[in-house]
Length: 315
Image 1 (cartoon, rainbow, N blue to C red):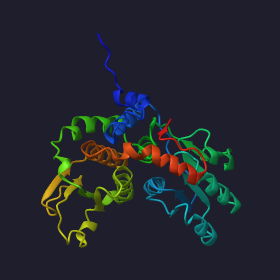
Image 2 (cartoon, one colour):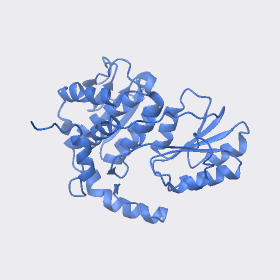
Image 3 (tube, rainbow, N blue to C red):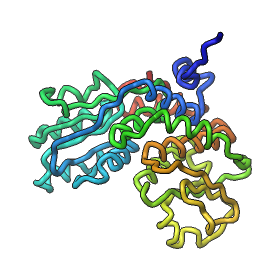
């Protein structure tokens, strides 16, 4: 009897090269296969008024994780202004998949302001780690990750979000395979404009989906991402040939071309992220390989900007 491979997508993620970079949907399934085998930490910090700092989608992840806390949110661009002017901040939560690039600078400056720093990362030896106290269980949270193309950041942030929501990765994986993957999808090649509508309770995912479209398609594919409530505010005033993709709540009003993607009952942010990234991966499959054709050049250019080597594949 041949034993069934329980992690085929994770295995793909571990073995791909620059010649056969997988699409985002495969990356999502691989991450969920990984997390189905790993025990994830719950994120608990003692601060009453934390400053939550991250760059790009790390900032969006922080907003999701600390959505229900009396927290202040910032990026690498404005965190020091917050530290300087808001005296009630009693700790800094730094979210960085690599713990590199801006992260050591943010950690160092935070320590200069005499703020305790908690690092949420995916690297056991992150450069920002040297600024941590390393005396408390909440000083650092290191989440598992899979090997991924640079900027995909799928396992990195889904894992952190699972540390907040405590959703079952196996249930999310089964739902995508048994439900989302069986939806009859339209011909995505017909559209170069997309309007993504998410349930209002998942407003924190809006920026993450915008960034993912930018990373994969640049300005070649147009996109809007809004909540079901915000879409009411004249965002569809000028009609165009675009595909409206709604998640969770069925769109019965906006656009002539519609795709509705259900979410399971009781879905939280990790499910929302996984299902939406999975569908964006299907769009990626239907388009020219913009990301794959440009990732090597981009990482070479960005390495010069950060003055450290950034590889197109993050091990």
